[in-house]
Length: 298
Image (cartoon, rainbow, N blue to C red):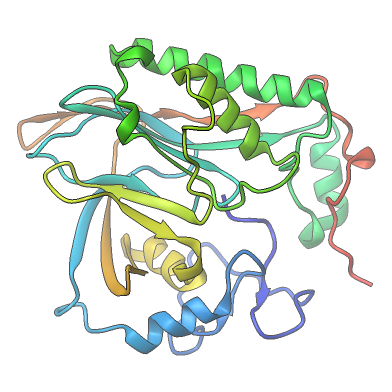
């Protein structure tokens, strides 16, 4: 999930740079442009410094799970790699549920009080969506919703939690650290669902992953090497983006999965993705009483 704030990396973080959805900027012009934390501007410079031409760069085509979607998918030697990215306050998960299938989701969870829209209209660009649970009721609500959706996903996909290969489970959330971060509550639900405790590792330095079951370990995408605006613009335009992985610049080509239905692709059944947006509403603390929701503009 992209935090609802932006600014030039080396300038006053209170200065915002609005970007339109279809904006196209030259990489030379935005090599140092980055969102405020957690996007370090050094990653953008590092990528530009070592980036090579697309012809010589290793390209990885993969099935891309966008934010707030997920599902059970075929995953064996004849299928493309699969993964997700930009899991900052969101949580990205990968479960090997059988020899030929996996469950992958990009879980977007938040607390949405009744006065949410009014608050957003009032504060505009300085507004931030609640990504913290500020009460036990909010924590329990998010946890229960994620647990129920996991049960439904397993039933729809024809697999059981007991059949998940726990040695291959991947969980990423680069903004995981914090007392009440909603990502922690999501992870609690995942641990409960799988019957795992602390042995379920959270890759809290990574914002995404790409898994290729035909060979090699999964690619874990570290936040420190995430250039932010540069590759997000590329992805919006043509589904292509780049990142340093283990010291090498890799070029990724995202193949979006169908959103709502199953289809045949080259004779193979590709299952559609389901909704993984988890918003807790009833019983949420009002926006006007919440903490750290508006940036200081003084």
